Length: 347
Ligand code: PBG
Image (cartoon, rainbow, N blue to C red; front, top):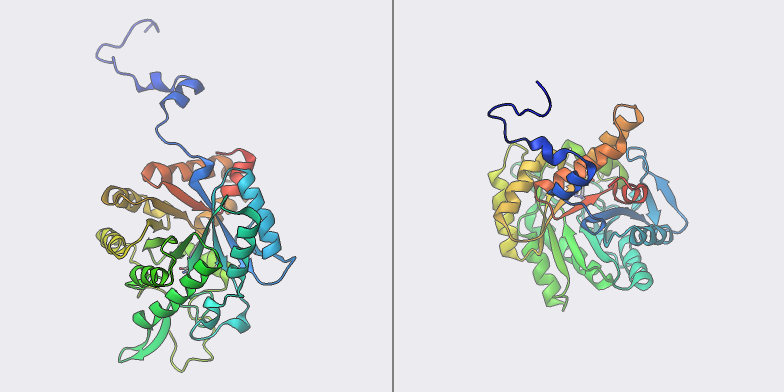
């Protein structure tokens, strides 16, 4: 059939709107801008230290001085927010995570240094969780119950609130509890308000699934559950399934969202991102709070490994997956790809 003729009954042609790069730019529904990315960093004690993380190629644990250079880099590519994770050596880890609220710890030092260096140009967020500070690697404290060793909810809240308060005092704009204890948003909100930090926000990891995709992070932070057990008579559970969510559940995500909103969360997070795009979409529809997706370590490592094996184009795969999170409804994305991708112009 000649090109000038129309197939009868075929007046509607979606391809018209894909006909050139300019047309596609005009039509695109989803945006991805530097200001929507949050860069994560692992902070260690000391100075002039940079420890590459084997399972996260391209990512290193950094001492505060090295971190400052990376924060400078973040600002230069248009990133406006970072989230800090503290990593302490094994000998600092105790059953109760006593160094989690140490005002001389790496996160506190990093907050003070970053505030001095950058004023209010960067939004400083911190991860609040005990797993990097407990010798058993759980996100809460252990207790003995009739069912054996359990992760005790309410005693954990006190320590988490102390940790959040310490971060606020060191200069955090926003604390992000990732422990999944019940009631922690309320406990942290109260502790901050009582100490005069009503201006410090709480980003809740409200919807956090027990996931295989955190594997590389646990190597980075030395926080796999049930690592060292010398202090413990009974072996604690080897997974986080008694506090992180079951990946088969979606309604439960909305329940967690509602509870955390009621307890005073300022922003919500869904984590991981790629295997949970349906959850991002449902939480987006159920809440008016800003929503963050966490493009977690395992998602990053998968793309890196596939790209290194020549199986896919890293730039295209990173762009497509970050856009998918935005399309699903995330306002912001925490991603280990952020700085490299922006610098290389992949987005
Ligand atoms: C701490 C925490 C974890 C992650 C963020 N905060 C690990 C976990 O819950 O085991 C995972 C982040 C990632 O995989 O990139 N609880």
